[in-house]
Length: 123
Ligand SMILES: [Zn+2]
Image 1 (cartoon, rainbow, N blue to C red):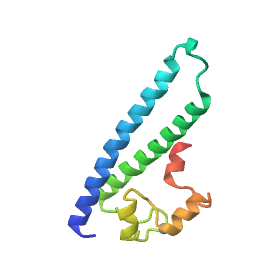
Image 2: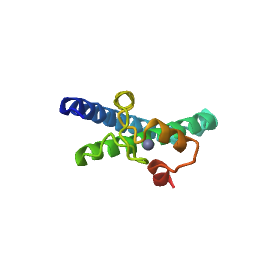
Image 3: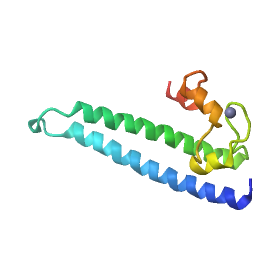
Image 4: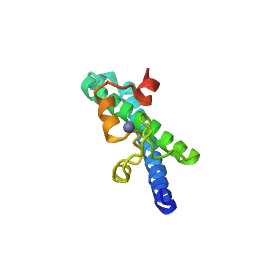
């Protein structure tokens, strides 16, 4: 990978990570606020709460992927598929800089054929 290109991607990843961290903080504050809500205001909206929790979970997975991508940049393995070890297409990295898989492996992970590291972490 060209050095300039890598630097741009690293900046993108770092900005994205900061955004994700503050977004997670905001969501957690929101959840806490809901818990602290005055019971007189009525029942907490469980549906909304579940939605927020699902979003929070997605963000935490994303944060994990982002941190991981940045670590891989440090040790020079960035851009290689985590499962098959082949190079991930540059266009794919442009669109999704924190992806750990090539298109083919991602499809397998999504179908549950292969267990990705994010799922391993979540267990
Ligand atoms: Zn792959």
